Amino acid sequence: MSFQDIEAGRPFSSRRGLMNGKQDPTQAVAAGIFQINTAVSTFQRLVNTLGTPKDTPDLREKLHKTRLHIGQLVKDTSAKLKQASDIDHHAEVNASKKIADAKLAKDFQAVLKEFQKAQRLAAERETAYTPFVPQAVLPSSYTASEVDVGSDKSPEQRALLVESRRQEVLFLDNEIAFNEAIIEEREQGIQEIQQQIGEVNEIFKDLAVLVHEQGAMIDDIGSNIENSHAATAQAKSQLAKASKTQRSNSSLTCLLLVIFGIVLLIVIIVLAA
Amino acid sequence: MGILYGMVARGQVILAEFSATQSNASVVAKQILSKINQGSDDTNNDSNVSFSHDRYVFHVKRTDGLTVLCMADDAFGRMIPFAFLEDIHKKFVKTYGRAILSAPAYAMNDEFSRVLNQQMEYYSNDPNADRLNRLKGEMTQVRTVMIDNIDKVLERGGRLEMLVEKTSAMNSNSIRFKRQSRRYKNNLWWSNVRLTAALIIIFFIVVYIILAFICHGPLLSSCRR
Image (cartoon, rainbow over all chains, first blue to last red; front, top):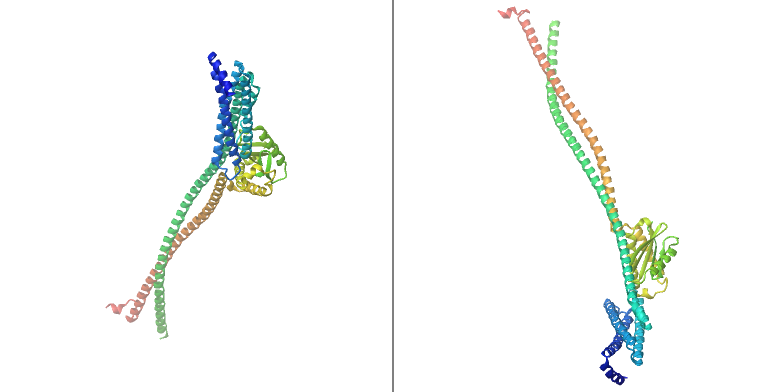
């Protein structure tokens, strides 16, 4: 095979420059498929670790990076496979070359199916990761190996991108509506609290007015009591003076009675004589 | 009212549920589950939505592929039901861990339904379930206490008014007492003055009579010479 390739390449290179570019896509596709196989094996090993004590956020991160790496490899290899397929259709090359390219496409499809299976298992284990829906379109387009299907790939990808973006926008709209509802409810609660604080403020003001008025009342009570105390003290002094006068009055009355007695006695003595 | 029904599911598989009343909440919840899982592909895993049905609202929270659902009264709002859903989700994941991914239907219903019941009671009746509700309750208590304070201060005002009247009366009485005591003192003084005058007059009369006898005549002729 390799000897025939070298032998066939020599006369064609002298005729056309296109033959020099023919072998590179095929070899690149083979190398890409090999790398994808290796990466998918690594991915499966990581998926088998899910659900075990080794399951860590670091492992999840590694799983994520491996998945992204496989996606990149699939993208590159699909581009190269498309290029090889175009060359096969236009150049009318050897039938063995065409068969080899078809085999590579079949291998590519098989490795993609294996990757999808591993992804589905990972999604079941994690219930968080999503399988690559756009990856399923690639094998079907290359199974047909038609230029029409290849030309339709771009609108399909564009439609998928629009759909994904629309769903993302819908998701964000739902989140915004939900958060707005929560915020509105919280605002209502805070407004109720503000209203109650206002009511408590009014109550405190009324209490201040009442306490101030009662302060005036207490002042009146104090002044009344002080006036009563002063008047009572004066009355007490007046009564003391009255008591002293009454004692003097009593002694004078006794003296008067004694004098009357003496006078009466003298009169009786004179009349008796 | 409050939260009447709670349920935890993985996809369409119900793992645990509890209903506080006899109703068709379970049937409606299954319909909501099928609608949610049908309408969303796996690109939109986490979501928070509410469905209105009759007089009740079904609140649904999907996080990491696990769906927590509850049914609450429509007047109950959204903050407490979603806090309930978040709490149930944490408790469920912490309790069962990775067994959630492979458990059959109703596998955790025997023990987790009790947890659902407790949390439904807590979030429905306890005002501490929500900080705003607790603050509202405290403000209500403050307002009640202040209204009591107003009543007590008004009562104190009434008593103070009574005390003002009584002290005014006491003041008037003490002033009248002062006046009457002064009048009494004056009366006694004048009485004393009258007695003194009477004694002086009687003294002079007695002296005159004695002199009349000694001088042998009312005109005191012999003593005058």
